[in-house]
Amino acid sequence: MANPEAKLETFLQWLQANRVELRGCNIKYCDSRKGFGIFSDKDVSDGIMLVVPLELAITPMRVLQDPFLGPECRALFEEGDVDDRFLMMLFLTVERLRKGSLWKPYLDMLPTTFGNTLWFSEEELQELRGTNLYRATELQKKSLLNLYETKVKDLAKKLLNLDGDSEIEVCFEDFLWANSVFWSRALNIPMPRSYVFPEMQDVHQSGTPEADKKGYSISLM
Image 1: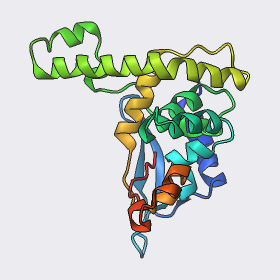
Image 2: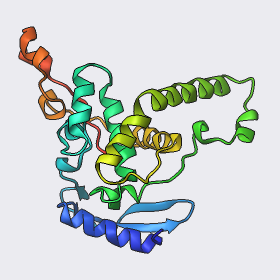
Image 3: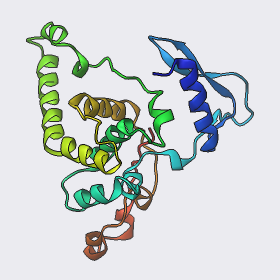
């Protein structure tokens, strides 16, 4: 595994290649507990410290149009088997495991574990026994495990095999990580629905007014 300085240098090169502008800030490594952070290093007249192209937003549309994941995901989405959040979590799960992922410099910068109760050890979780949080954690983990076993596991493995990464094993912790990354980094940005979701055939045939086809959710990871 690369040291923090090497990961940061690779990430900065990736940002530059993808037209990200660090106008009034820089990225530094703090320590093993805090990880990386963005720090202001100068005043900017318009107050814009950082510019990230929307092409770097991980949205349902990006997943469905992805040449690698798109065909499989689009079929599931059009059949109504999965929702938009699932698409992005699957994307994160697979891209993190792919050896040749174009997103690797970014994904390598993210935390590998999280502090919420879904990540507690069995011993830590027992300290919460009898509380509402304990019950909620049990239910949520059971739900995620069921989703992983019924939809994620085989599909992720199939996609990795198609990419030539047949030796890579997919485990529940990979999906748990993707779930935690999504919920800790999802942002809502007002955008036309057509930018975030493809226009499905049934939408065209439904006679839905154009104004009702607008959506205002986009997840920028």
